[in-house]
Length: 162
Image (cartoon, rainbow, N blue to C red; front, side):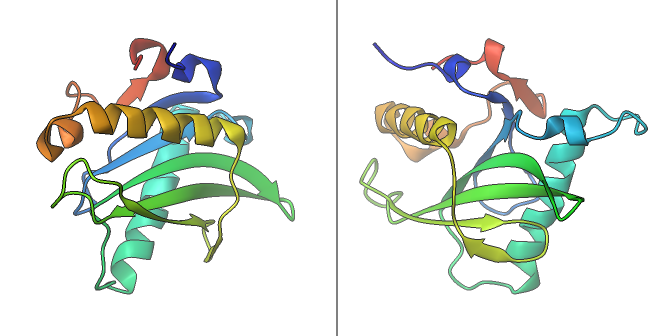
């Protein structure tokens, strides 16, 4: 029986259209309480907007030559030294589109607002990645995997079962 994302701490996912390659960014509930209600935006959007800014800065400030074919990332928030940080666990995928579905090479690291570091993650993220890879391998061509679902920016998990 296939696992469901409902068994994890993820609340939804989004695509960052400002990145020039396909991506799926999952939002974990860890640390969302650190976003205050002083802002008119929902905490989900506050966390995703912070993550999007960090991803754009990482991928385009250095103008990396070897951009990934696609990324999957988990976004979560933690308090580090008394400061709220939005953290992305990034999984860059390469070398599968030409030989679809292939077996992609995956590089992993964290973006934490100030730098990129060696990655650490959690079991919920491993479950999400397994479901993503199972879904990807069932898609007959890359376009089927990368096409957007619906026309909303944020997709809540209860509406999205694999």
